[in-house]
Length: 165
Image (tube, rainbow, N blue to C red; front, side):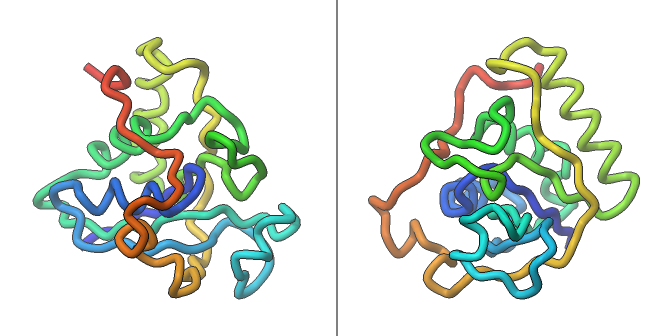
């Protein structure tokens, strides 16, 4: 099994869409990329912790690939809006790929370059590439949130035209 940590706005919506992809074996939401140890939800909302709301995605590399996962990531959020998704604003809502090694970083950069070259997205990708850091699991009430609250808030959806050829 492999895993990748992605941030792209509110973690609930991303988790719900990723869990439906073939080859995904598990997800959990949490916080990463900052300097405050053991952050909680309220710690991330003053932007002082440096953490992003993120989703840890476990996947079977025999059934899907990091490239496929990243291409999907760029379809379910707007990577051209720095520190924002929909009404959610702040560094905790930044778009970021937390890579665990040079191979993952290269794959991520190749996908970013392809998205930028395609001209299908509304602007240049603002997604940052950040080395993997400690992933702090979010509170229980955030895990599987949209499973527990099917009509809950989300700013994520699949954009049908944002597809790489």
